[in-house]
Picture (cartoon, each protein chain N blue to C red):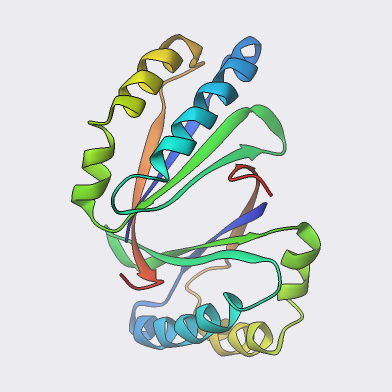
Length: 98
Length: 98
């Protein structure tokens, strides 16, 4: 399992817009080939900070996500909602296997 | 969904022992009431660093995990495998809902 944690800091006045865009991206992404998780998390201490936990069976599946129409729509929608650039951290899944 | 990310740095010579203990904890934890994920991740840049992604339906379910026999066994097994104290970060799940 190929995992990416994406940390997002949103402009406070755009939080509701971001959540709506994120919901659409979540609903489409969980139906992708090889997707295992696409969990959208919020920081309990700061409602403008989010973490997206994206897990795919393989790195190729994760890369294919960035070519989907719903990813490209989301990327363009949220571009001016960011308070600062997103950061991503990659992990390798041990368990569950496969 | 109540999520905790636990960051673990293991003594290099105890990595194999840690993975064996972690596998047993994973296999039992995913069968707990309210468990949604119990993913064990490894840092691709440092084989002695791990992240456990624990998601439960409710905070009460997450707390109940720490009362299980398999958690207590794991906690005691890994106590002297740590290179430094574990740290945990809590998130609230937005999607998937529930």
